[in-house]
Length: 439
Image (cartoon, rainbow, N blue to C red):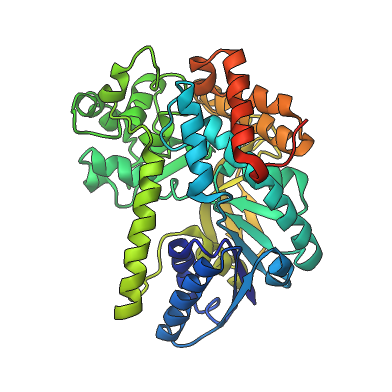
């Protein structure tokens, strides 16, 4: 069996996912094909994974494929393809995504999922995924594509609607959602045996139900803790608790993410909200710099002291592959097309995040029904620019980029239409060859 990792220069993540596969008996003897366009980063991943493979008993084989000219060979015959690419990296593209909008007074926190930063990231990534899909349809047409790259809903939605590749989008935020909420509210004793239902869209999936092991609804207890935490100046998950207070439900992704997915919290006319809700503006660039420096230090340590023991993580990827190969059951929160009205009050062409059963037949999404109307409305404010961004990528029409930015809730609430268009033009120019030509 062959497992191909696209963007294997994401060394820490590749180590975790491939390391997880090496912990699974049914996966450990696979050929692990590593693909990247950066030779130095690819070699770092190869060195780490080879050492890990030897430490795990020498099962399987590592193969490396560098550059676009070798991409098709990397994919040839794969059973599973893991996608973790970042087109344009932190420098220059993430820097551009933050600094150009800042000139127009538009501030962001993460800018990888929605907002003008998420839109631009999708527009430079979808053309690359189009090339991946064309190769996969030729050399591994039955492979399952596990997408970890953001913006999750836009990229997964594109693959699901416009290619023949079997695709599921995977995110870390579902696994830790309910436990994280209980833990930060001091309710850890209710975590064991808890039951939950999460559905919506990526990074704004809603914790619709949370019950203790005996089936008792925990939301009434949770809501008694909200005001105290919102008043605590040192508490950082305030946006999501404010969601509970005003919309009735908690959501999957962090408050620094959700601060920029709406028109409520980052407002130039209300600067006091930044401190009140502990919103970390420019958080992602800081995180990137720290991660780059941290990895350089860690890699040097690994070269001198050797690879540490890897214990299987909670990442979905290896568990999905194991469930398919062994034809056993495993449940995930997956990003899939809303075909068959999985969520009945969201559009059929939206990419939604719902419970999915994985077995020998692949990923089977589960019907959820309607979301509470206010939650569906919140999701729609994000789905609208997501769908229009995909339309822009497919048609190459600049007017759709303008429209996606205009309908983005944060961008549209801060800037007028003419300013939005000028900002988009400046972003397109700054990204240069990282974007295709638009007309």
